Image (cartoon, rainbow, N blue to C red; front, side):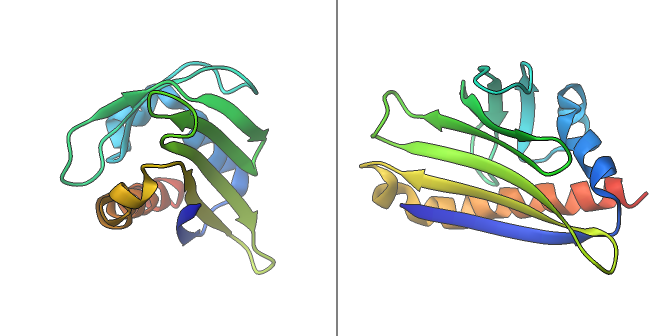
Length: 143
């Protein structure tokens, strides 16, 4: 298994960051990486997600919601064609800091037979997409 992990400190309450993350209808307006999410953020529900890593064409998939802890954690599990080939567990975490504000963690755990073939692209283009999204999320939440 490989994990791609990024994080950013955001000077805003967890509830504000969470409200931006859960407003799927507005993703096309602000999110440079996850350009569309349709569906309900409920455990075991299927979403329709379109991502566009930096320098790549959009990719659409239908992951299942695996994590939902209001103001703290949201995640989904998706796969390419079939389980075990190329699976990704995408996770957003919001950690409250004692001194105020939060740390937003944006990560994905990849597993499956094809991960070694795609790791370089994931570690460059997908990482750049995560970081771009984190930056805009920070800007929006701190307004």
